[in-house]
Each structure stands twice: as structure tokens, then as C-alpha cells.
Length: 309
Image (cartoon, rainbow, N blue to C red):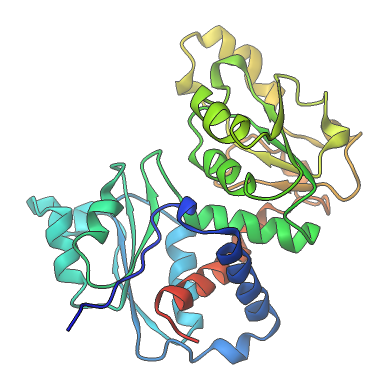
């Protein structure tokens, strides 16, 4: 008898636009009819294997499974697992796949979730592997955009801050590039510009219009979405350059003076100081509701991977 193929989610690139749209449809249905889903995963167990710290991602997955009527087990740091004794990722996964029905995993090493899925009899969800992939954050971003703008096409998206090392930015560009009439405004200091391979392999290959600027105000009035990330001191070779630029990329109420009334301001969180708290009460600030949407899209993903109707 042929072994059943197990579905995993390691990268957002695995999902077609139809699959993304279906996940968003289910998430929206969950938001509207939560009681319909509260027993869907009764008897199912989610294992959360977090080899590095996490607050939002881990707790939102736990919340997602509990809201579906399932149970959760796992660990929140490598030191509390057998990894501290030298156990390999492959062995950990082989053992845990006998304890649970689905695994969500975060690991500091890029590619670790891929190793995991080759050694698992149950679905693996990548909750972040180093600077590589964080597909459920991207799904959260897409649900937020769809909820707030009513569409995933015909949008001008500003990405601001660390565009060089930010995995959330890279994944969002990859996902949004699948939709029609998307334009990106890439706002960053020269030191943290979007990598050339992403511009070449995704934007230019798909003939997607983009503009690079170091001025957060220059295109503010054109934006439908403003996605903020942190400008990190450790990424600069020259401290004087960091001091010169760090405050320029802090979003405050003054910088929003010419922005659209229906601008959607997003941030993957955690925030340090790149968005002033004065913006929090602006109705255009969506980063906290964005974090909440993460629960619903993860509920939809768990249902998909467990093949629960």
C-alpha cells in the first residue's frame, strides 16, 4: 500500500494564488462564524517546536489550535529540549511526529524545517528559519491587506526600513508579485536596499514596477500600504551613518500629513522605535489587528494541512 503524501508549508512560494485566496476565504469565514470551527480539530495535537524565542508566532499558533478545539504540546527554547544534549533535528522530528498530528517549528538555522519535513510523517509548518522564510507571517500580511483594502491587486505598497535583511519583506514581495498591477516603493538607506537578486529574479522577471528611494516622505501620498521594519544599528559599518539616518525612518504623525485617509500601516512586530506611539491611535495603524489576524490565517492553514473540511 502506497504511503499517503504529507503536506508541509516551508515557503510561501509553495502556494499558488488560488491556494492563498482559499486560505484567506476560510480565515474570513472563521472571523465571521467562529463557533462553526471550535470543534474542527477535536482530538488533534499541535506540537510547537521553538528552538529560538518567539512571542507572537508561538502564542498565535497555540491560540489557533485551541480555538479549533485541539491541544498543544511543545517547548519554547532549545535549552529545554534534547537539542541541548546534542540530539539532531531529524531525530527530534521523528520522535515528536509520533506524539502529535502537526508540527510548527522555528529554528535559527536556515533550511532546518526542510530537513524536518524529510523526517516527518505529519505536516510541518515553518515558523521561521533564520533569515530565510517565515511563510505564516506573509499569510498574516496578505490577510491583513485583504481585510483592510478588500483586494490583493491594484496596490501601491511602500516597504520601509531594512529591506536587505528583512525576511518578512522578501516573502511579502514574492507573494504580492503573483497579483496584478502591484507597484512597490522601496524606502531604505543605501546600506539596507533590497538585494539585487530579489529585484532581478522577482520584480524585473515579473515586470513589476518599483522605485527605490531613501526619502520616506517623497511618495507618501501615493501609498495604499506602508509596511514598516526596523533600521538596525548592527547592519551599519559606520556609526555616523546610522546616527544620521536612524530617526529619519521613524514614522510619526507629522510624516503622515500627506498620506491617504485609507492608508494601511503595517509592521510584523516587535516594534522598537520605528513607529512612534503617537501613531497607535491613528485609524490607519493596523499593526496590532494585523497580529490578531495571524491567529485566523493560522487556523485556516492548520485545517488545510490536516485536511479537515
